[in-house]
Amino acid sequence: MRFMVLVKADDKSEAGVMPDEKLIVDMGKFNEQLVKAGVMLAGEGLHPSSKGARIKIGADGKRTVIDGPFAETKELIAGFWMIQVKSKEEALEWFLRCPAEVELRQVFEAADFAPVIKTAEGRAVMDAEAEFKKRNS
Image (cartoon, rainbow, N blue to C red; front, top):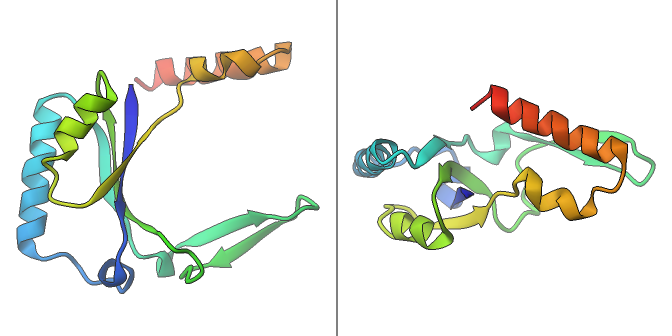
């Protein structure tokens, strides 16, 4: 199963303050362990929301671009990992060793949506998703 592990932003990361060297070194060592174990699929830090944008969809379907920062948001993301493990317990075991405070969220797999797929169009979308994953794994 896959998990996205989120690093919460704070006042410093939102201000664009870079982490200190010790944290960078500690994160690098932690990432190396994840890679060697075959757990890490991806992992990156993110620029502050002031450099980002959101696309909102109105009730009429019109899309509006809103440039950051996103002051009205209580919690923002400063970075992430995408990992593959056998269980939530294994994910927790790994990230109890992480040098940052994190949130773990399981990623939906295509099979999770099977109970709601009732049409040929829905099955075609699921088949296309499976083909995409097969090509990119």
